[in-house]
Length: 610
Image 1: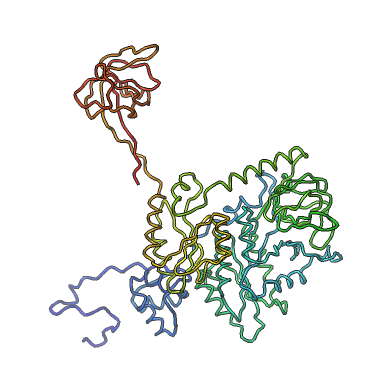
Image 2: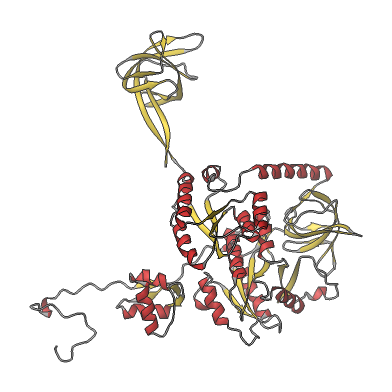
């Protein structure tokens, strides 16, 4: 070896070949790596095995599994060790959620839109502090103008932060959140995911993530209980990344705020971040539109009669308005906010308790304002008819997917997957999602271990999906709810059977291509009268054949005169079903009596090809 040679240079040239005549390979372009990615994704980018990446990470002091998320610096170090240059990939700007959600909580008139408060739902695992966080928010940020009011539970309330309002839905969790979606009432703009810093991501946390993602709402993570001795926020961040939520600190787009609901720490920061997310969502509504809203809670009061807590979505509801909500109607006699203060009007994103309905509506019922009692009763009748039609419609199942797609009611196959053990999830999920095509997507919207529960059924209802179980059973409550709502649940013991059944369904699910098959052509050589106002063409079959009932078109000088079908076909005086090439026949077409000598008749059929 020549003294002073660079040890990091490429391999020496083979014996007999001098350095001067060696060909220099072109320098490979640097690969782009996102701010964060999984070990598996990095291995694919580098075209090496995951084991190679994991070994190199270990040499660099990083212990990671195949699904673990690593940052750009760690990924670049692995690439450099393999002689591959990298550069940081700038994330493309996403389409704003405001564009996607303009359909939600917005007055139908495009003009007059104004910014409105965001509507927030808190979700998470049991005992992770959802209720205490709600209490902490309410106690520390009650609106000053309502300080003298009497606090009452109405299912929703507003707080004020730096002069801006935020509306919170006080629901029991993601089950109620999804139950409202199942009734067609998606009213949440932002979901707060509460995760205990000492406990981490748990099964119900994963459920909440799936429910929020299925609803298409942005998630803000509140890492709660940071005051506890065993708190480990970094562990929570890693578990969130494993679940597909990459926080901003790690190069993602999910906001995560450490809080302590018990000591009321981080509450202001959480609310300020909510306002920031809301600003990006550009939430607007038209306060001048006809008032509309959704019932979030309802009940019967012994002294006041039917009460309904309504979240106004667009327009402004006023005392004296005639309203219909579900199958209940009435005139608004009084309205109160969550502090018990009487209101004369309620603007968009404002929750109010309404008095004046003739009966108790259901949660999720839509409120509309009408002119009078006659219009109210007419709207109720229409809603009852719509409800009957909806109940008569077929739910999604593997056996009717093609019909649902053809009707335009289903664009993708949403699947809730439940397995007996964690190790079964990835192979089944990957196998199913690989079956998707450009025309038809297979989307596993929720995965978990354990038996099929009512929460799974509610998610299937809201997402118009079906449930697949692998070596699990269906709880009795879930089975009853599924039967009542028509949700398809399929249980399997062999993975191949799952993939095979879904693949068969997808083949019927793909929109078929309708093609035209030319069966024959004939030339008109004479025109005959066959009764009152009816003509028959005397034709010579030049190619193919003519069959009774075939579709036909008449061409005259390269112009299509008519599209019709063969209603009569005769050879001499006999009715026949088919005439072959080289024979003459008489042809009558449906609703056409304008044959001319020299016309070309083209006979064809259509068929669907998948």
